[in-house]
Image 1 (cartoon, one colour):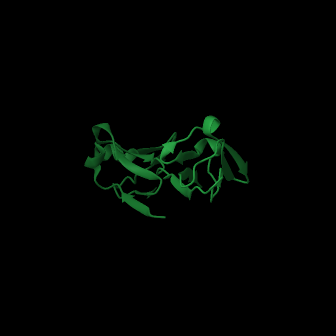
Image 2 (cartoon, helix red, strand yellow):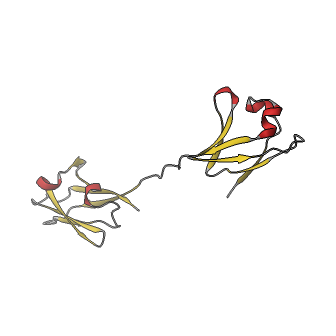
Image 3 (cartoon, helix red, strand yellow):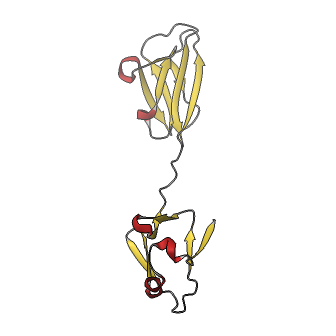
Length: 150
């Protein structure tokens, strides 16, 4: 974990006078407020900021405050299973566990998105899904099953 050590020594950055800062500095973190008293001699006040979760922001009038960083978006990883149909083949099984269940599965036949109720049925067994087409599929058609994995 990276930690940034901040010393409040440039009072002009805060938009307040040195005398104002000698009494107190208010730093807000989310809904809670922490107050750090500055020494009367005008020395340094170390404020430790967890750079991974907090960021220092300069607001209106040059007032500085801490705020929680938004979490980094988690990328969605998709698995694609490809099949070339053989004679009389109508069932296809995902190779990995589907994250989020049946509603996240996309089935394509020769590049065209298929509809679950009209074109195929899906059944789950411990996170692995079997896609069964309702009608016979011609030999050498291409089936793609796309789904998010955990």
